[in-house]
Length: 183
Image 1 (cartoon, rainbow, N blue to C red):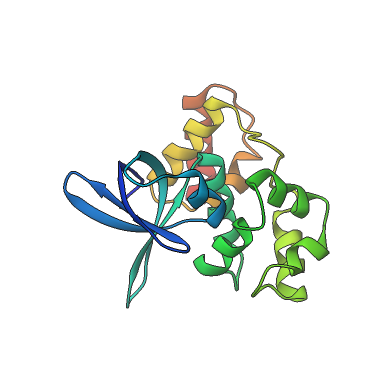
Image 2 (spheres, rainbow, N blue to C red):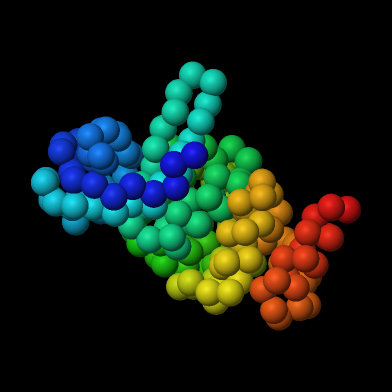
């Protein structure tokens, strides 16, 4: 699974770029706002969501881990696929999208092509209590989440379990979370 890419930008399209890493070109779909920040022949670093389906593999690139986390959270909503999630991410910064979700801003969410009122309500309902403006997790909790996701648990499962873990030491948090996840 590809988690990040660092390389030179060879070509740019409307919502994608071709980034060369060690002689291999990767076509990565990105938000138009990020595309304008990147220049041809510059080196770029992107966090990657590697989406695998029966008929295709797609790479979605993000500037920050916070952006990738929001994208992953959106994918956890039934009826939201990677294309719709990327379109939602194109509305503005990750903080803008999080704020729209946290405040229940239905107008902003339904302004996204492909997102109707029911889908917008579902996104707001399911993510409202889980998102924190900015990056609400401290470094230790992020490490705990990364470790559990690395073991094969979904981001949603990890987030739900960590809410109930009382331990503060990262190793103890992982052990307690694994006990809860095993049930």
